[in-house]
Amino acid sequence: MKKIPYIAFIVVIFLLFSNLVFNYGKAEAKNSFKDISTSYWAADEIDYLSSKGIISGFNDGSFKPGQYITRGQAAIMLTKALNLSTQNRPNPNLKDVSTRSPYYKPVSALADENIIDDLIKDGYYYPGQLLTRGEMAAILAKSYGLGGTSTEKYIDVPDYYWAYEYIQSLAANHITTGFSDKTFRPNQPLTRAEFSVFLSRIMDSKFRSVGNRTVYLDNGIEEMNFQKGYSDNRFSSYYNADEYDVVESNTGEVFKNYFTMYIDRWADPGNGWAYVEFPLNGRYETFSTIVGLTKQYQNTTDEIHLKFTADGQPLKNMTWTAGMLTENVTLNVKGKKVLRIYMEVADPKDDAELGFFNPVFTLVNEPAPLISAPRPSKTVVYNDNGIKMMNFQKGYSDNRFSSYYNADEYDVIESNTGEVFKNYFTMYIDRWADPGNGWSYVEYPLNGKYKTFKATVGLTKRYQNTTNNMTLIFSADQQPLKTMTWSAGMLTQDVSIDVTGKKVLRIYVEVPNPTDDSEIGFFNPIFIKN
Image (cartoon, rainbow, N blue to C red; front, top):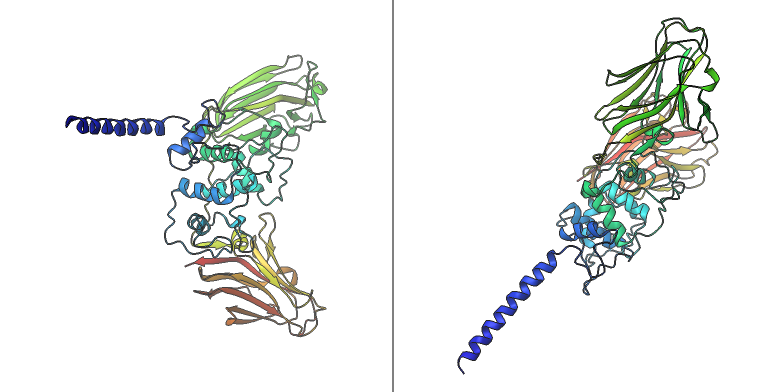
């Protein structure tokens, strides 16, 4: 009888041990979630993130891949993926993310890294709101410093859409391909599986696929920055991929995608080569095209000399004359940076035009490395991205005192000293403003996060001849920091304002007695963090 407790003890130990072993094995098993089969389209990506502790399932052992992901959940996953410290981060003072919220630490870390500033509106993050595909593009592109521009244009993402550049970055890095109907659907919510796939593609190149490896000239030409050159205006190269425009070869075939190289009969003999150039940057493996005379000039009596080179080294030479049939040409350009195609007629007697029909570039098999862009700075916040994070506000006493901000990379402003700036905001006074009727201002909530505001201040070129005297006051927390008076002819001046510990910065402008239109510019404004 005394042996029974001993045997029971051994049985208990065995059961505990076996349970530990079996559970360990189950945790390590591929696709361990009960609702994710090994054949599920996102199984590998979900398993990859799960193995790294970035994602987890639910208490019932499921992953629920079709469930939409919220902004709060995305913040937790992203903080883990980036391995960001969540300790001692400044409080972003969000109205809907209290210090007791389970999202407080990850959201604070991402806010401090300037990753989620596009998602913060009027002091709210909305952690329970579903994450959209456009918002996903923004936070992933910022998190991993993705850059680049894709030839893929989505019909529902115009170039003025707020997340256009972020979506382009994801496409350029083969993180997304959009939908088959040429849409991206930026406002559509994102599922847990979809977010896992996008995140995995960035973190590990094995999940990135270049998709269709063939880049036709009708979409690749923008990406490859098609260039043309000629020695005089009678040697020229021309590209057309208009879907309504076609060219016919001398063998009667009709092509929509092509470029041609043309020689005028009046060109000076031996006066040089026309050429086209494609910067490949090592991304392409082959260049293929059908070469032949165009139908219009099939009866030329000239000898046309053709030379393909890569990085200045010859790849192939050809001579073309009337009556020759079109010929398929394929060139190995793997690892090459620049492809050039030259054409010359040594002694032109009539007009000649050589066509390159259906030209295509084949991408290398290996996924291209990520195209990087500068991460948002932890110390300097430029107004072209920081202005949204800091909730730029404007105020005026009537509609003739106004403030305006612009940081469009294609839009510039010139100061009265002739310097050109891309990032700026201006404050404008109309000649019809009532004298002494108030101040225009811009306001930035600093929340104690910044120590310095800097800008180059001066009149804009357009209003440099104003006869008005403008008064500028920089104030923080309603206390004046600096006062300036500006009038015509004054040179631009660099201004640095100490805002350490301040909660709100305001910049006021007033013209006591306006006699003409005036505009003061704040060029290249930046905020420096503590």
